[in-house]
Image 1: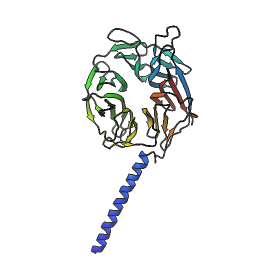
Image 2 (image 1 turned 180 degrees about the vertical axis):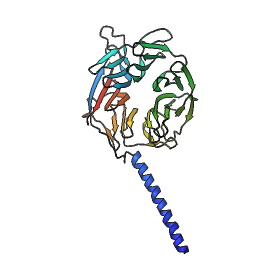
Image 3 (image 1 turned 90 degrees about the vertical axis):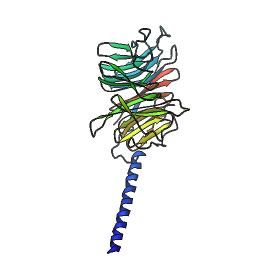
Image 4 (image 1 turned 120 degrees about the horizontal axis):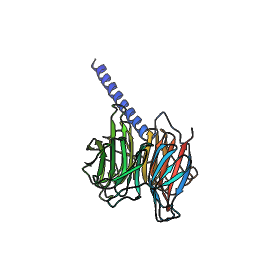
Amino acid sequence: MLNIYNKLILFLFYLLIILLLLMQSCERDFLSVGNVIDTTSHNFQWESFTIGGLGGSSYFLDAAIVNENDIWAVGEIYADSIQPWKPYNAVHWDGDEWELKRIPTNSVVGLGFYPLKTVFPFDSDNIWMFSDAGSYCHWNGLEWESEYVPERQGGINKIWGSSPTDIYFVGTNGNITHYNGSSWQKLESGTEVDFQDIWGCRNSWNGEWEILAMGHGAVLNGDIALLKIEGSSFRSLNTNGLPSYLSSLWFIPGQIYYVVGEGVFYALSLGDNWQPDTTHPSLHKVSIRGQAANDIFITGSYGLVSHFNGMSWHHYTGSELPTIYGGYWSISYKEDLMVAVGESGEKGIIIKGIRKQ
């Protein structure tokens, strides 16, 4: 009887070991681009546009897709042949062409057309931008409004909001500022790192928004921060495994979390140590955006454009893209349309990709 009992215990022990190994195998397959059943297409038709460079170096820092006939890119663009010293700060795609724009921006010394750092739309009649001069620019459907925001403690790099009454602005010197639809509030992040990105996604399990911001300080001292924003308070998250230079993040709550910069890093949950994905080219990664765990883009320096379809990362080459020159500093991705912006030489560059089914 004792022998049978010992055999049963031994059998259960080995069964437990096998189950644990299977679970680890499934985890590795998913994270290393392995075992997602549904895939999306890598087949995009690409078009590129270079703009500016007439009276100075031009660049784009951010882009936003409202729909296929309503796309914005912001930065500083020298493209005025009459007044070459006078830059534009945005371009708009109307379905046929890019139109140069000078969006009015306020400052402590008055109204101007200062370079724009970032853009975030809710719809065609509710678009937010932020300028180098410390002011927001808001399109309300009729006109551009712009005011200097003294509540912030540094420059703004990115905007994200769950609604027009819940918008976060993140940037330098630990700057996180919240707008509730009527007033501004400077939030004490507890850090002085330069926040590079913010992203939020609704948790499908509980319906709540999960909002993360991340950034780095001086690269030599290795200061980095990854915060979960909970209203006006913050929770510091695990950064073990992350490098000292971080550029962008994207995630789906409880499924997959990505951070890019000096490489590509992932985690299944916010408590896990971050793991490197070494399948990527050794180029600097600047931006990541996706629509699902099987539909993600990464862009960066030296023409880097990569897409994950749920099974593999595809790194587009010069024969697939109109140009491989320049760097792409920001991505906007919606349905079957991807737009990335940056700079190439002294010109701003935009690539637009449409997925072919």
